[in-house]
Length: 242
Image (cartoon, rainbow, N blue to C red; front, top):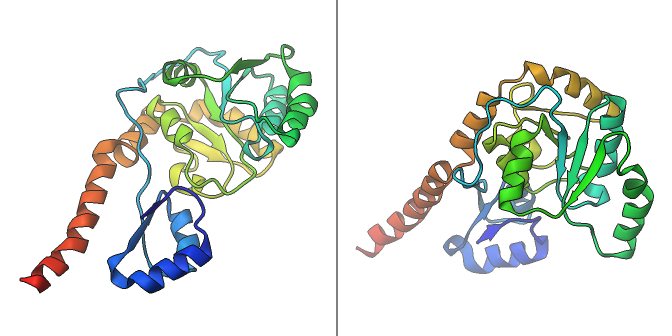
């Protein structure tokens, strides 16, 4: 059984207790697996992967390349913090992603996002498909998604790396497994650290970002982890039956 979100402890506990060794859990990050292990069972982290054919590597971007926020536009994803960092550093910011259709989501949009749009270089591109994501991420100086929750994985971060685009986010959840600090991005704790990260972006090599995607988040890297796990789980039982 594979988990892409925080496991429900009661469900995991009973599943592990009833199934014994016949049920193994995987999580899309070690962060998720750590949560699952508290309830019991065997847990193995295997990250999600990104299609490298869909996202083209862009080794260079324009000197005035924008920052890009690409995610659901809700508080836990930190669009308001991205706006604050962009304004302080005089950077253009393109916000892309779905608005959240709930009272809280509407209030967040109307009070903390909409008042900043179409001024000071802050733009909203709306929801985007894979082709548009490839274009946005490829032209970006950085993907900036300063999360306020423990991200289970966040496929957009792997997509950005595939384009050669560094990441600015926060040291929470799976981001600690995705971003190598100072190599393919920066994990920051507040707006001030975010501004410092913007200043340091020219020090990063976009080749390293793409290499991280290829080595850690490609199908070629992830599929063998599943097949290896299946083989290890099946072989002892096959031998026992024989």
